[in-house]
Image (tube, rainbow, N blue to C red; front, side, top):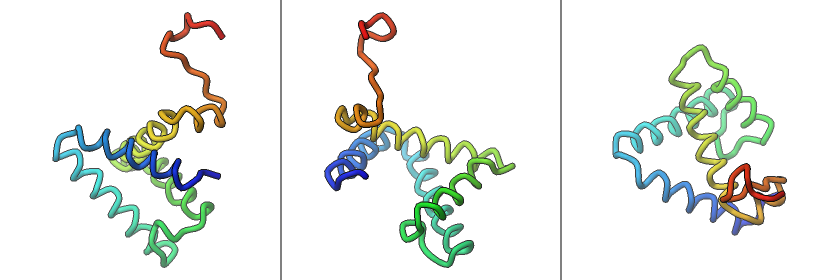
Length: 109
């Protein structure tokens, strides 16, 4: 389970990454988040942030497997941002078993 500090670090990393992107992309991301929240309200009667982890996973998986390419791409983008937020934290990456090195594949293991 992630700590409050780890969640804050994830949010800060995502904010830094997104703030460097064009305004049009930031609007698309905000629209996707509104769409996900609306889908959660329609399907479960609660906001996205209030869903159980099982419900949230089901909703996101459904969008990731949608026939609508734009939904699949949006979920892939969110996934990428979340991974950026986790794997840029050395202690979280270590807990996840991620041992990448700036030296790439040639680095000693």
